[in-house]
Every structure is written in structure tokens, then in C-alpha cells.
Image (cartoon, rainbow, N blue to C red; front, side, top):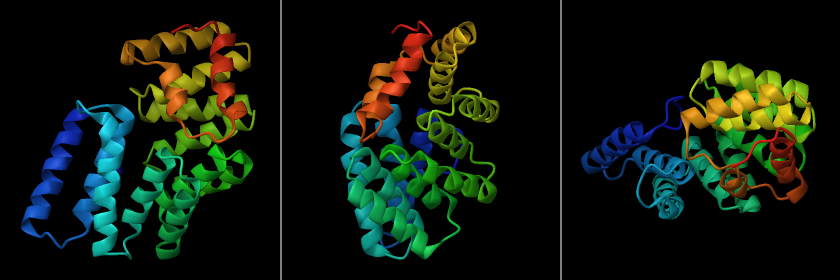
Length: 240
């Protein structure tokens, strides 16, 4: 389910049912364990289950099983990279992304995971060409554009970030994540009414959205980079 643009509780439940059935049919097949790892990693982000706070550890458990059964599967290493991203284990995150890329240099998800290291450790300029490569390899995956927009945002290139976030929203109209960054970028640019309109759209899509919770989860190593997100929303006059 990590490969799709539609991510919600219904997709999560269907996907995990299928992965568990695959394991029942062949307990030694590595791929469905990585699939469960990806599903629970996404649940940690999106809170589809009643206990999302335990889902990251669950994701790690399944992904370790997958790698133990097939250490040469780049997808499992990519899932592991994302798990360690959310755990803020920068060394293991980098190692797993590099391992996935060594197994498949044209794996767009692994390229994305490696680029994410650069965003969240304060080197967004190094991330930009990697995201562009991921988009060329996998143009249908809208999330690559979100992270490309984030790289420009962290670099302070707000005009470019706005254009890219709008592209991502056109591909995934119900995204709250890209709208939050878009509203912040517009706030930095002084386009206040436009920022507030984007924020109203976001709250219609997800009335429970909290930018304090959102930025608190993102694994920025440097507080100043994280602060750019909140500062832009404050400039736009957006309140929780």
C-alpha cells in the first residue's frame, strides 16, 4: 500500500488482510512481511487503528522478519529506512536507504528515502536532484512531489515550493499534508488570503488536523528547519 496514492483506513484493512493471508499460505515468503511493515508504518503516521502509538514498533518487527527471510529485497530495506526515519535513527535510516539503492539503483522509493535524509538533516539542496530522479522514474507517485516541495520549502525557495505543492494537490486532491506546507509557504510570501483559503480547504478535508502535532512528528534534526513551517502559518494568521 506504500505504492498507492490512496491511503485510508479501508485500504489499510484490506491490505493487511491480504498480507496476513499470504503469510498463512507461505510463511517463508518475505514480501508480505514487508507489506505489513509498510502498512503499520503508515498507520503510525495516519492513525487508522485504535493504537497507532504501537504501530511503528509493529512495523519494525514485521520488516526485520522480511529482511531475515530475504536480505536482498530492496523494498524491505526501503520500508526499514522509512521506519527508522520516524524513529529518528539517522544512521540506520541512511544505512537502510543505501542498502536498498545498492540492490536497485533505480528504485524510486529508495531514492526518495535517501533524499529524505538530506531534507531532515538540513541539506535540502542535495535532496532536490534525487526527488527529481524519483519523479522521472515513478511519475504516478504523487508523494515524490510533496517531498520535492518540502525540499524547496526548507531551502527557503517558497515560490518554487508553492508551485510544486499545487502540483501534488492536483494529483491527490484530498491531501492535508501538502496543503499545510502550501499554506505555510504562502504565509512566508505574504499571500495571506490565499494561505487562509488553503487552510480552510485543509480543515474541510481533515477537521482534526493539528499543525503542532504534525511538525512534532516530522524528524527534523535542526529545530530552525521545523520552525519555518510554524512561522509561515503564523504569518498567515492561521490558528489551531
